[in-house]
Image 1 (cartoon, one colour):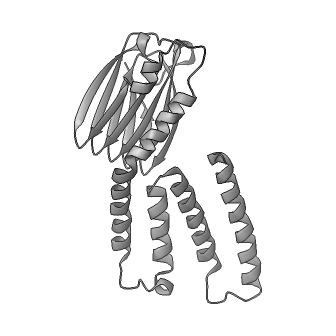
Image 2: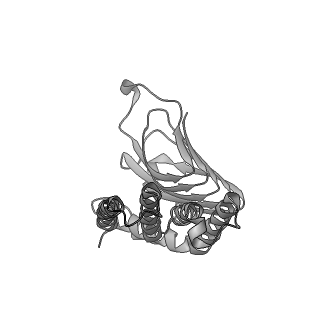
Image 3: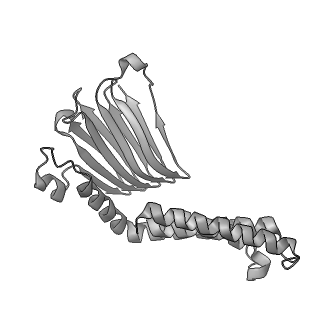
Length: 240
């Protein structure tokens, strides 16, 4: 079952359960529970399950922490403060991201291979060896790419800083993709001014900013797609 279909099913179940809870609550069977707390709890469970499927652990532990805060008395967690629960969720997120990061990276690699255009001139060795892959943990690195030779690349970073520079005005196939998977990291990507940037990332307590906007008549035929996950960090795209 495809991830998109699984997500649709999960949200479908959520709306069904929400309807059931609303009706049951109105009938007086859940008087000891707040209907809004129950609905929020159901939403958090749905988000957590979806995050587990994607191995996005921030989406797993923070919704669960919200459930723990809302239902602390029912769960016997009254002795734990809100900050203790949130910090526990943060540390669990960091730990699981570091342990299972390789699995997530392999998922992106498989996606890389699946999305390759069969009409392109990419050599198999490029796909298998990932010449354009950057892996850094608790450090900093810079990488220069020749635009005319670039088609796809990947950035995996945790507690690090990464800078990527593109030299040359035109991409090899007029389009290229960078997959980023970052945790507590900052990524800066410098591109020629005329490039069109398409942001397709998913952010969790992070963000992506595209600087130095250009007018429509300045946009050329080159497009760079940015995909992946940014968790507790940021990605800056700068046109030069």
